[in-house]
Image 1 (tube, rainbow, N blue to C red):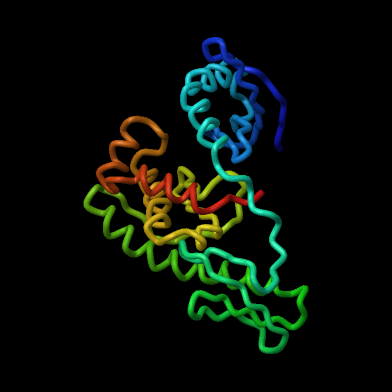
Image 2 (tube, helix red, strand yellow):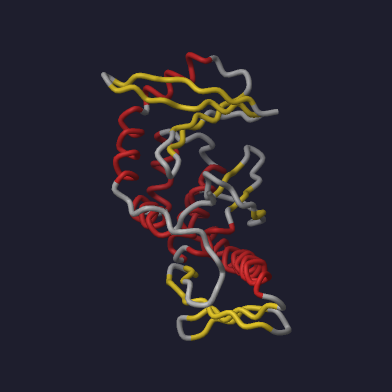
Length: 239
Protein backbone atom coordinates (compact mmCIF):
# COMPACT_ATOMS: atom_id res chain seq x y z
CA UNK A 1 0.00 0.00 0.00
CA UNK A 2 1.31 3.46 -0.94
CA UNK A 3 0.04 6.81 0.35
CA UNK A 4 1.06 10.16 -1.18
CA UNK A 5 0.52 13.77 -0.13
CA UNK A 6 2.28 17.14 -0.48
CA UNK A 7 3.70 19.26 2.34
CA UNK A 8 5.95 22.31 2.84
CA UNK A 9 8.92 22.59 5.21
CA UNK A 10 10.92 25.68 6.11
CA UNK A 11 14.69 26.04 6.20
CA UNK A 12 15.49 29.49 7.52
CA UNK A 13 13.49 31.82 5.28
CA UNK A 14 13.27 29.27 2.45
CA UNK A 15 10.17 27.19 1.87
CA UNK A 16 10.83 23.64 0.66
CA UNK A 17 7.83 21.92 -0.92
CA UNK A 18 8.09 18.15 -0.68
CA UNK A 19 6.00 15.10 -1.42
CA UNK A 20 5.50 12.41 1.21
CA UNK A 21 5.27 8.85 -0.10
CA UNK A 22 4.32 6.32 2.57
CA UNK A 23 5.15 2.69 1.89
CA UNK A 24 5.51 -0.57 3.75
CA UNK A 25 9.18 -0.06 4.63
CA UNK A 26 11.35 0.46 7.71
CA UNK A 27 13.45 3.52 6.93
CA UNK A 28 12.79 7.16 6.03
CA UNK A 29 14.71 8.62 3.10
CA UNK A 30 14.87 12.13 1.65
CA UNK A 31 15.47 12.36 -2.10
CA UNK A 32 15.99 15.18 -4.59
CA UNK A 33 14.76 14.05 -8.00
CA UNK A 34 16.50 14.99 -11.26
CA UNK A 35 13.93 17.74 -11.88
CA UNK A 36 14.63 19.27 -8.44
CA UNK A 37 11.49 18.04 -6.69
CA UNK A 38 11.90 16.74 -3.13
CA UNK A 39 10.26 13.59 -1.86
CA UNK A 40 10.30 11.86 1.50
CA UNK A 41 9.75 8.12 1.32
CA UNK A 42 8.60 7.00 4.77
CA UNK A 43 7.20 3.99 6.63
CA UNK A 44 3.42 4.00 6.87
CA UNK A 45 3.36 4.83 10.60
CA UNK A 46 5.94 7.66 10.64
CA UNK A 47 4.53 10.77 12.39
CA UNK A 48 4.11 13.79 10.11
CA UNK A 49 6.28 15.97 12.35
CA UNK A 50 9.15 13.49 12.17
CA UNK A 51 9.13 13.64 8.38
CA UNK A 52 9.02 17.44 8.38
CA UNK A 53 11.87 17.57 10.93
CA UNK A 54 14.00 15.31 8.73
CA UNK A 55 13.37 17.47 5.65
CA UNK A 56 14.25 20.64 7.58
CA UNK A 57 17.35 19.00 9.06
CA UNK A 58 18.56 18.22 5.55
CA UNK A 59 17.59 21.65 4.24
CA UNK A 60 21.14 22.73 3.40
CA UNK A 61 21.79 19.50 1.50
CA UNK A 62 18.47 19.76 -0.37
CA UNK A 63 19.13 23.34 -1.51
CA UNK A 64 22.67 22.41 -2.57
CA UNK A 65 21.34 19.50 -4.66
CA UNK A 66 18.73 21.74 -6.28
CA UNK A 67 21.37 24.38 -7.15
CA UNK A 68 23.59 21.75 -8.75
CA UNK A 69 20.69 20.29 -10.72
CA UNK A 70 19.66 23.75 -11.95
CA UNK A 71 22.93 24.24 -13.85
CA UNK A 72 22.95 20.82 -15.50
CA UNK A 73 22.19 20.59 -19.22
CA UNK A 74 18.55 19.90 -20.13
CA UNK A 75 17.50 16.26 -20.40
CA UNK A 76 18.25 14.50 -23.65
CA UNK A 77 15.36 14.16 -26.11
CA UNK A 78 13.44 10.91 -26.05
CA UNK A 79 15.34 8.02 -27.58
CA UNK A 80 14.21 6.88 -31.04
CA UNK A 81 16.58 3.90 -31.37
CA UNK A 82 17.60 4.72 -34.92
CA UNK A 83 20.98 4.79 -36.65
CA UNK A 84 23.07 7.81 -35.68
CA UNK A 85 21.88 8.10 -32.07
CA UNK A 86 24.48 7.82 -29.33
CA UNK A 87 24.10 5.54 -26.33
CA UNK A 88 26.50 5.27 -23.41
CA UNK A 89 27.99 1.86 -22.61
CA UNK A 90 30.36 1.47 -19.65
CA UNK A 91 30.89 5.21 -19.59
CA UNK A 92 31.68 5.73 -23.29
CA UNK A 93 29.40 7.07 -25.98
CA UNK A 94 28.70 4.65 -28.83
CA UNK A 95 26.92 5.46 -32.07
CA UNK A 96 23.95 3.27 -32.91
CA UNK A 97 23.76 1.46 -36.26
CA UNK A 98 20.53 -0.43 -36.82
CA UNK A 99 20.13 -3.07 -39.51
CA UNK A 100 17.13 -5.25 -40.32
CA UNK A 101 17.65 -8.99 -40.28
CA UNK A 102 18.12 -12.18 -38.29
CA UNK A 103 19.38 -13.32 -35.90
CA UNK A 104 18.60 -10.39 -33.64
CA UNK A 105 21.41 -9.16 -31.42
CA UNK A 106 23.97 -6.47 -30.62
CA UNK A 107 27.68 -6.22 -31.33
CA UNK A 108 30.15 -3.60 -30.08
CA UNK A 109 32.83 -2.50 -32.52
CA UNK A 110 34.93 0.63 -33.02
CA UNK A 111 32.74 2.93 -30.98
CA UNK A 112 29.49 1.59 -32.46
CA UNK A 113 26.62 -0.51 -31.21
CA UNK A 114 25.54 -2.65 -34.16
CA UNK A 115 21.91 -3.65 -33.57
CA UNK A 116 20.24 -6.26 -35.75
CA UNK A 117 16.46 -6.46 -35.38
CA UNK A 118 13.69 -8.21 -37.23
CA UNK A 119 11.86 -4.89 -37.72
CA UNK A 120 12.81 -1.24 -36.96
CA UNK A 121 10.26 -1.20 -34.15
CA UNK A 122 12.10 -4.01 -32.35
CA UNK A 123 15.45 -2.16 -32.18
CA UNK A 124 14.64 -0.66 -28.77
CA UNK A 125 13.69 -4.04 -27.28
CA UNK A 126 16.74 -5.78 -28.70
CA UNK A 127 19.12 -3.11 -27.38
CA UNK A 128 17.41 -2.83 -23.98
CA UNK A 129 17.54 -6.59 -23.44
CA UNK A 130 21.19 -6.65 -24.47
CA UNK A 131 22.04 -3.84 -22.03
CA UNK A 132 20.28 -5.71 -19.23
CA UNK A 133 22.13 -8.95 -20.01
CA UNK A 134 25.44 -7.10 -20.09
CA UNK A 135 24.57 -5.39 -16.78
CA UNK A 136 24.16 -8.79 -15.13
CA UNK A 137 27.47 -10.11 -16.50
CA UNK A 138 29.51 -6.98 -15.69
CA UNK A 139 28.02 -6.52 -12.24
CA UNK A 140 28.64 -10.16 -11.34
CA UNK A 141 32.29 -9.65 -12.32
CA UNK A 142 32.59 -6.42 -10.32
CA UNK A 143 30.82 -7.99 -7.33
CA UNK A 144 33.67 -10.49 -7.00
CA UNK A 145 36.19 -7.64 -6.86
CA UNK A 146 34.05 -5.58 -4.48
CA UNK A 147 33.58 -8.44 -2.04
CA UNK A 148 37.33 -9.02 -1.93
CA UNK A 149 37.94 -5.29 -1.38
CA UNK A 150 35.35 -5.05 1.41
CA UNK A 151 36.11 -8.27 3.27
CA UNK A 152 39.05 -6.84 5.31
CA UNK A 153 36.56 -4.32 6.76
CA UNK A 154 34.15 -6.98 8.00
CA UNK A 155 31.73 -6.84 5.07
CA UNK A 156 30.33 -10.26 4.15
CA UNK A 157 27.76 -11.26 1.53
CA UNK A 158 27.10 -14.21 -0.79
CA UNK A 159 27.22 -11.89 -3.82
CA UNK A 160 23.71 -12.65 -5.06
CA UNK A 161 21.62 -9.74 -6.34
CA UNK A 162 18.65 -8.93 -8.55
CA UNK A 163 18.18 -6.27 -11.22
CA UNK A 164 15.24 -3.87 -11.26
CA UNK A 165 14.84 -0.58 -13.12
CA UNK A 166 14.21 2.11 -10.47
CA UNK A 167 13.33 5.77 -10.92
CA UNK A 168 15.29 7.23 -8.01
CA UNK A 169 17.83 4.63 -6.88
CA UNK A 170 20.95 2.98 -8.21
CA UNK A 171 20.69 0.20 -5.65
CA UNK A 172 19.14 -0.97 -2.40
CA UNK A 173 19.83 -3.38 0.45
CA UNK A 174 17.29 -4.81 2.88
CA UNK A 175 18.03 -5.73 6.49
CA UNK A 176 18.03 -9.35 5.37
CA UNK A 177 20.83 -8.54 2.92
CA UNK A 178 18.79 -8.74 -0.28
CA UNK A 179 20.58 -6.59 -2.87
CA UNK A 180 18.86 -4.93 -5.83
CA UNK A 181 20.65 -2.89 -8.49
CA UNK A 182 19.49 -0.71 -11.35
CA UNK A 183 20.44 -2.20 -14.75
CA UNK A 184 20.96 1.35 -16.04
CA UNK A 185 24.32 1.13 -14.28
CA UNK A 186 25.59 -0.57 -17.45
CA UNK A 187 25.81 2.92 -18.95
CA UNK A 188 28.31 3.97 -16.24
CA UNK A 189 32.08 3.35 -16.02
CA UNK A 190 33.14 0.32 -14.02
CA UNK A 191 34.57 2.44 -11.20
CA UNK A 192 31.12 4.02 -10.72
CA UNK A 193 29.51 0.56 -10.74
CA UNK A 194 31.97 -0.45 -8.03
CA UNK A 195 30.89 2.55 -5.96
CA UNK A 196 27.21 1.53 -6.07
CA UNK A 197 27.96 -2.11 -5.25
CA UNK A 198 30.19 -1.17 -2.33
CA UNK A 199 27.71 1.46 -1.13
CA UNK A 200 25.06 -1.22 -0.72
CA UNK A 201 27.43 -3.89 0.60
CA UNK A 202 28.48 -1.58 3.45
CA UNK A 203 24.88 -1.72 4.68
CA UNK A 204 25.62 -5.29 5.72
CA UNK A 205 27.61 -3.75 8.58
CA UNK A 206 25.91 -0.36 9.04
CA UNK A 207 22.30 -0.43 7.84
CA UNK A 208 21.48 3.27 8.29
CA UNK A 209 23.14 6.26 6.63
CA UNK A 210 24.75 7.52 9.81
CA UNK A 211 28.26 8.71 10.62
CA UNK A 212 29.47 5.15 11.23
CA UNK A 213 28.19 4.08 7.81
CA UNK A 214 30.00 6.85 5.94
CA UNK A 215 33.16 6.25 7.95
CA UNK A 216 33.06 2.61 6.86
CA UNK A 217 32.39 3.49 3.21
CA UNK A 218 35.31 5.93 3.25
CA UNK A 219 37.63 3.20 4.52
CA UNK A 220 36.39 0.65 2.02
CA UNK A 221 36.38 3.07 -0.93
CA UNK A 222 38.37 6.30 -0.45
CA UNK A 223 37.23 8.87 -2.98
CA UNK A 224 33.68 7.52 -3.21
CA UNK A 225 32.22 11.03 -3.41
CA UNK A 226 34.03 11.71 -6.70
CA UNK A 227 32.72 8.45 -8.12
CA UNK A 228 29.18 9.28 -7.05
CA UNK A 229 29.40 12.71 -8.66
CA UNK A 230 30.72 11.21 -11.89
CA UNK A 231 27.94 8.63 -11.95
CA UNK A 232 25.21 11.22 -11.51
CA UNK A 233 26.82 13.43 -14.13
CA UNK A 234 27.12 10.74 -16.80
CA UNK A 235 23.99 8.63 -16.41
CA UNK A 236 20.35 9.62 -16.00
CA UNK A 237 17.95 7.52 -13.98
CA UNK A 238 14.71 6.34 -15.56
CA UNK A 239 12.18 9.08 -16.08
